[in-house]
Length: 120
Image 1 (cartoon, helix red, strand yellow):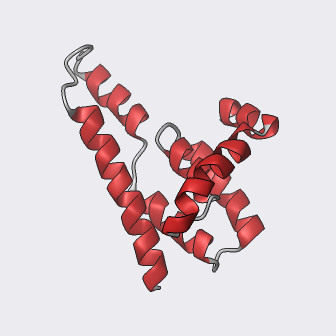
Image 2 (spheres, one colour):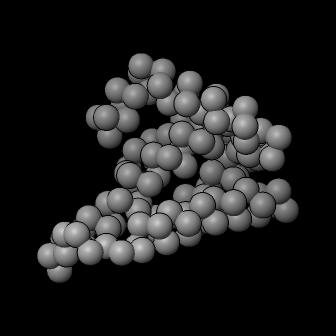
Image 3 (cartoon, helix red, strand yellow):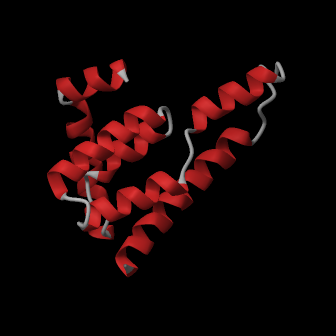
């Protein structure tokens, strides 16, 4: 959470969201979801903090608020989970296709979250 606080106060997350938002905006994905989606891969508590800020700015019933809520429930903290589970069984180098599969499933979860928010 401290690292995310530093990134937020420096303006990096906002600039990063705006940069990717210009690419994703034509597809219907709000730029406010970009930092949340990236931080969600690393830390759940930091993502919840970003989610609460998004609720304050856009509102819970806005499209961005609904999409963010669905994204939070459809994705997992990939890097934390891999670290914990592979560390528990002492696997250090042979993660094979786990990271690619986990990142792909997170991307699918985020995409489905945005699509479901459109339907609601």
